[in-house]
Image (tube, rainbow, N blue to C red; front, side, top):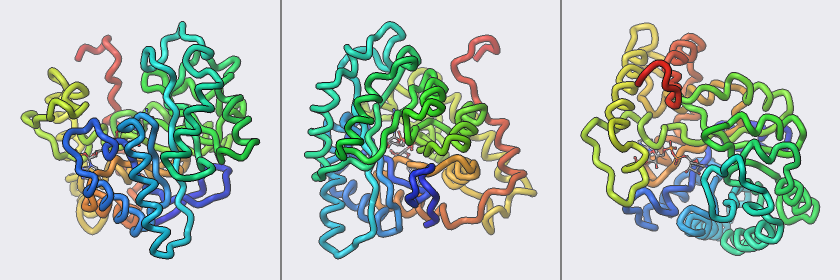
Length: 337
Ligand SMILES: NC(=O)c1ccc[n+]([C@@H]2O[C@H](COP(=O)([O-])OP(=O)(O)OC[C@H]3O[C@@H](n4cnc5c(N)ncnc54)[C@H](OP(=O)(O)O)[C@@H]3O)[C@@H](O)[C@H]2O)c1
């Protein structure tokens, strides 16, 4: 496992971290034994950064992570493992509507109560990185919830302050980075979603804000495992995410990426051609602003496959550039579907 500086924060984080959503629930059947094995294997392989949230199974993901870290300490392991968790806003639109008031969605007493619950679930007296789970640009001029998080930092209850960028307007966090409100941001950045390269990643380098990359596989699609006939269980959120013709469209685009990976000039990038999952991770890691990429991991086998990617040779500049053409502006109607 290779390590990178976590922004200007002066600690080294594994470049492949652990995404802890699916182990909490919402992704179809998931046995705790598999989740625990996944966490254990990732930690054994040098992963030292875990992302979770209050909302992942109503704290279930946090509690499993606490258990895995307790088990690890019992083995005598001493190297630090950093855990980032998130506080959701009070119930309402997600992402927040432009009309929402911060005092309604993230009031101070609610933030403080939620922090206590995070501390209890994670069995700790200090959260390494506390993130607001979503945001709206409407709050940028006077970001009161972040003032509360900075106060909690001064009180020693949290190490670092972060925001998870809202999917419809990720660049809304750029002003927060420039104004020094956040130590870390969490963003969707992958072979389909390349917009962060326009500004956000450049600002991260300039300001020293750490970047945590989420959804590197576009919720699994960029591992190349899906076909147009893939069926998601009703309780797997992907039954909605890939509803209608979305799955067929995404599968067709993945096939185009595969063609690029098989081109003669790229077919020996790592001794052989990268698999889709390897290429998805390596392409993201090729950007120097990225501190860690946190693929969702559900099994020990996925922990092994994803952690091993760190050791593969870096992606060539030529392939990085070639894959830029798969940028996909899904929300824009002018070009048709
Ligand atoms: N708003 C937010 O702040 C937010 C939103 C989303 C995610 N996140 C964070 O980011 C993390 C990553 O995103 P994500 O989990 O949503 O999606 P993702 O990383 O794009 O996809 C994860 C899924 O891909 C499959 N997978 C993982 N490794 C694989 C491998 N080597 N080969 C084949 N399949 C593999 C697994 O599902 P299957 O085995 O079922 O296919 C896994 O659950 C989350 O876990 C969470 O910590 C944050």
